Length: 81
Image (cartoon, rainbow, N blue to C red):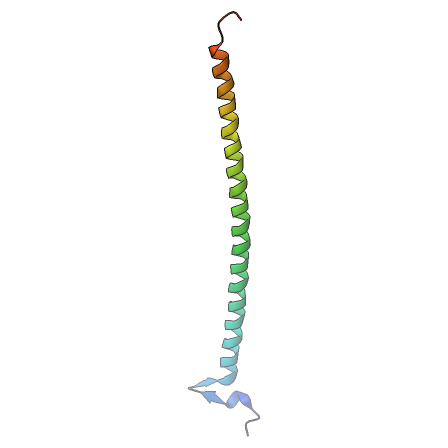
């Protein structure tokens, strides 16, 4: 009698429809997990890029300071030397 599952229902919904909904929910969960993983990977890459940019900016500041120091030394030299 229970061999035909499509006729079994709970609150008007067939068991197969409920199973389909659960399958769709599991697929959505997997998609969300995949997206979260992608976001984490992108975040890690961004952190690395920010670190690289910060290092470059700091080095650029050092170079500007060195250039300014050289300019100041040149300006302090007496004219004609």
